[in-house]
Image (cartoon, rainbow, N blue to C red):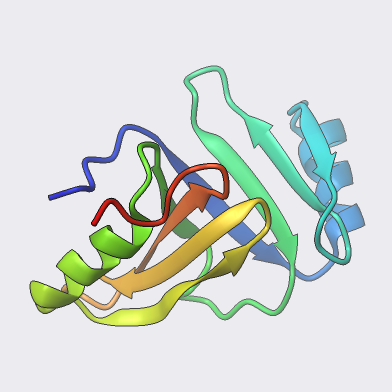
Length: 127
């Protein structure tokens, strides 16, 4: 299979991005970077162990946030999603444009939402 995760991010959908920035930066002491490309900006930070935290201001429903997003590091997100579908995995959101690249969402056997993200600099397919 084309996906063998080497890194992942945890994505939170929050109701107030400025309040979130203040809490995680001032209260918890995390270094967060404001990222442009979506309205409003989103926040990104990396813990010392390499785990990446990402915050978007948008409606989130308990159960779909936080979300675990696997990074596709060698390209081929279209191939990976096709292979997941062939294995009977429920694809919630097909490959679509995302800030800085491409993303897709799918469910694990218990219905937990998982996702893929790939940089726009990498090829979407190797076929």
